[in-house]
Length: 418
Image 1: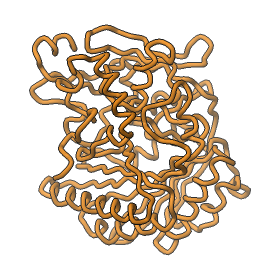
Image 2 (image 1 turned 90 degrees about the horizontal axis):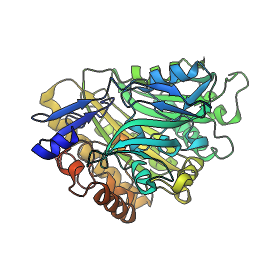
Image 3 (image 1 turned 180 degrees about the horizontal axis):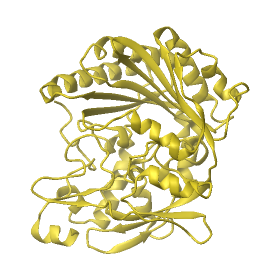
């Protein structure tokens, strides 16, 4: 297909899970769309230390299959997300122990711009291996992932819902868990604030990598569990079952907008962001949320293994907090209004973050939206290295010119303003 595209100069797209939330990310009109769903291998190596995963899989199926032997790989946290997540980094429940998904790849099978199939490892084509750890779809088509396995039996997880008087306590619990990850890296958290039926509501999704007795929980969970919730569904369950929860929170059939940003962890600024979101975005006719996740110091320490990744994050800067402005609506006539409101919110947050000295340039690719210029946010040094590697393996810029979907080495998919 790549050679045909080069010969005819016909543009193309490659679709794995197709989870990216804007048109054209993994499909194309007036071109060739290649869907990988039939490439759904899930097989363990003979020693069970790695698993061969086809790019047409989704994480729910991967975890279900590997869970039969109490194993897992470092991957996505929603059951219907695809393997393309690995190329953008890949936050996982286990990241504070093992790092991101891209930090736990034994090898990639890659079809290059010349049509050659390469097995890419830390020692075979190490520059390309480095670039694929965060550089997105700019270097080739990955047709097989070999991922390192980890032991994973039953774990604890679920959600807890709170009303607005609990917000300061939730923010403090979030920051405390992020700060304590070095002492206990087995926990994970996703804190979201939204408007539900006209009322402000906060939801925390918690995970702990072992079963938990909630009457006597690990110390790192206590701040959260000491805040009385109005609804909770936390229990001991499998990893595969846990991933269904996040999928259920993002039903299909809607219009979506994602906007991503990263800041230094700061309780006061979290409170400012939540208040500003509730004031400016909450009254709009959407059902989205403002979501916080932590980039912990131990997770970022893992990013240096196997030659490092391309993301440009350093544990010296941590812990960091990632914000995802997630908006969902049904009426296409509101596209411009809601995207403009999102842009205004993100710009105001950027100004405030700089005033507080908590701003960072980094944009997490897997949560970015089509108006965001992602790859340059990794830093000038990383960008220059990625460009050099792309030129080496794709000298005619096939993946820049003929595969326009996703996040290219420079420029936002839809332009940086609306």
